[in-house]
Length: 285
Figure 1 (cartoon, rainbow, N blue to C red):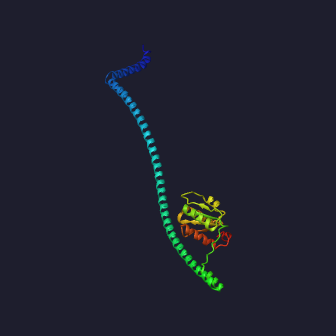
Figure 2 (spheres, helix red, strand yellow):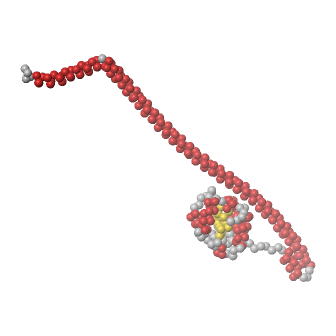
């Protein structure tokens, strides 16, 4: 019997410990801990359901937020487009106001020049009437006098001399800037009254037609005289023209009239041509 005790004693201790642990666990589960565990399980289920609901609500909120962001972005694009349209409208209004003011100024100048031309024509008509009266008187004297040479001399002195008008047959002229009506009437006047043969080149202001510096050079390459009406032109167009002239890219002379009216522009062109024998004498100036 003494020989068996060393084997039984090591086995009984672990069995006793396991039994005590099982009893302890059973007591905990079967009592308050069991009820508490059951309550916790119910609360866990409720929490999981609430979490599911909150997750669905979060997904819906994210979807609504995405829709709101898209709507906001669309409104921003529409606002940007409206702002661009407003800026374009304001610029167009400013250009129209400037053109309106320039047209009124040109009209006033045109009326003033027309009045001056009317007065000049009246004076010229009066001079012609006086010359005609002198001519008739001298003619009567010629019939009654034997000194024909003296009468002829007096007659020739009484007839006013007509200033020679320069011929524009060989000239190639370009008009840069200026109002459309100004260019049209000036060209018609030079063609019908002063012998302009070559059709002039017309470069409208940039607000009417955009021309690059390369296009400007090509259009003005063969012109002998370039009339730049800066009073009714864009700064960019005038700047491009002057840059081409500084680069010696234009053979023609640039004439900047002091007047924007038709008669003033025509008068300064004729005065310039009268000072030049041929178009080639002033090229490169």
